[in-house]
Image (tube, rainbow, N blue to C red; front, side):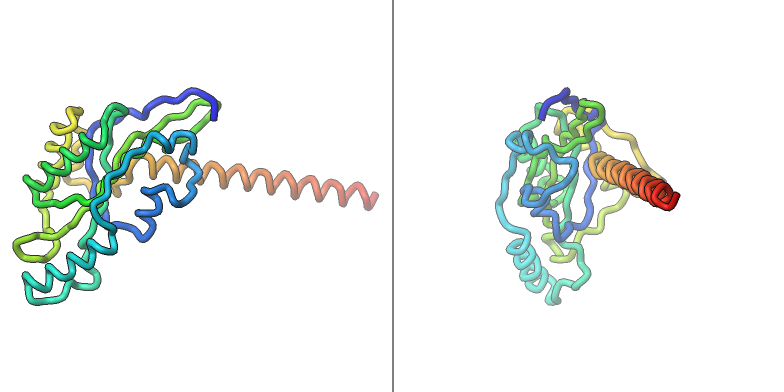
Length: 219
């Protein structure tokens, strides 16, 4: 793929969400997505200690051992964090970050993926969104239950990530109920909307063309 590549700018941030069924396939690039540049996949990095399936079994067993109860079916005991990074950050930087998350907050990270291949292209210019995915055990090792962090705890995590990665902290969002989407996901959705708009325009032109042809044939 030819054209100019730029890096999306942004402050440091870490956002945790429940892991999706497609997360591993997405992170390992086992599924196609329109905003991935296949010639850039070679620049990605990954570090895997355990599969999501195996870690979930471990979590369930530990919960039973510590609390005497089974892990609730709706418990979100594995979460995925998206971390904004700079182009120079490596897998070792993210491993150090994950070590600090475990030491300071008890969050165990068992998979790390750095993606340098996602971005939108317009008029020959591509804006790449450099980011990392941390797959984490969301379990309090004292109780066996899932974590219950306060907004203050989550704010301290943002401070720690900015410090660990030597980046400017992202915008604070205290007292905000706005849904938080990582930049690349938001842009991917915008791109999908743009593509759907183009499809509708093409369909409309084809319908007008067919109508015009039918009108001529009846004259």
